Length: 304
Image (cartoon, rainbow, N blue to C red; front, side, top):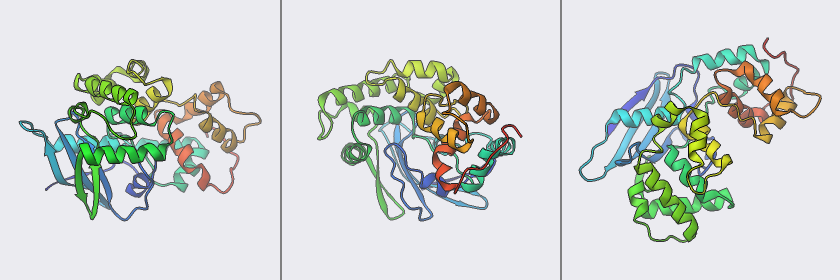
């Protein structure tokens, strides 16, 4: 057993992250522990981690670690990956400044204190989910992913619950077939596994390329179109300032929250989002996640 602590630089709520459902994650009621099971960056191991928060920070306990034979995993690497998953690898104190500049964002921050965007464990896992869930219901494919992980990944006992990590790329390449995954999907998933082993899905590498090039590169993966390429870029690599201008749901919410006289166009969205820099991604996620918590929109002065 190994432990680590991450001290948030600004407001952060582990409960908000744990109860934030997206992708294959269900929005389960928080019981004080956020349980994670994932392929460690570099794919030499899988880890099971329990997270708890108190006034001193977010504390992680690595209950088990399954390195592949002949390899090792640095605890610092697990800590860094968890920080990225929780969006704690950024200076979140500056996000509060966005709420002071923009009254709508400020109201949402008050309604959902400490909500930062939780991410996929890695670009590899986001790409696998993208192929799995394409043209299928998320609930159905989340169950398929769960069964695949229990059978071919690694299983961890975390605070009284069993959780399985997705198969590593090496493990996935050994799977010859699986119920609920047709041949085409499995072929595409194994293509992603090969790309991961070649280093093409390394989060640090993709971050150094920037969001535009990353999105272009992700579309070179068979089965990944523009929508899922953006998903990987924004919700797995961890770029904090990519405005989702093509998301109609976000624009609809902006229309309502900012009381626009007509539907928000992409150009108008970018104008409004300029006040959210350098956290346009975070502000957009906050709008989607917390807009329903506001009883009624109030007029705001953008940039006030």
